[in-house]
Amino acid sequence: MKAPILALLAFAMMATSPAAADCYADYKAKQVDPPLRLHYGVAQISDGACSIAGAEGELAPRLVDAGFTLLLIVSTFGPEGLDERKASAGDNFLRY
Image (cartoon, rainbow, N blue to C red; front, top):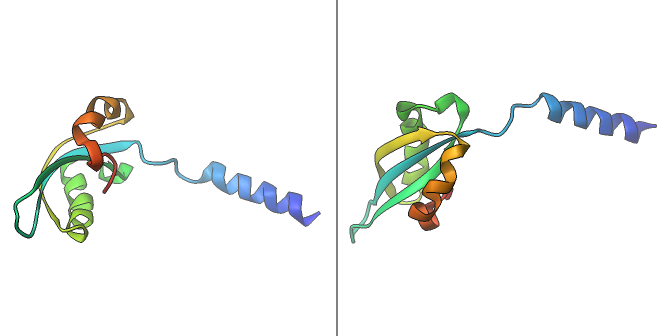
């Protein structure tokens, strides 16, 4: 009897939890240490940070951890803009 109740509770919790973020930002960054390396990428941003300023605050620390400095947030957009940016971002598509 416990298993069905636990399963029902787990399902109910999933149904009321927030959905995955539907906000993304495309950005330009540079490598901190020489040699100079620039890259363009696309990153998922939380819904609460879905603005240029919010994306800067959320993405900059992620890039620093990887040895990059954020130069510019180009734009923020929803899932409808992912396909058109995927080829340009290459390995940096949803990497950070």
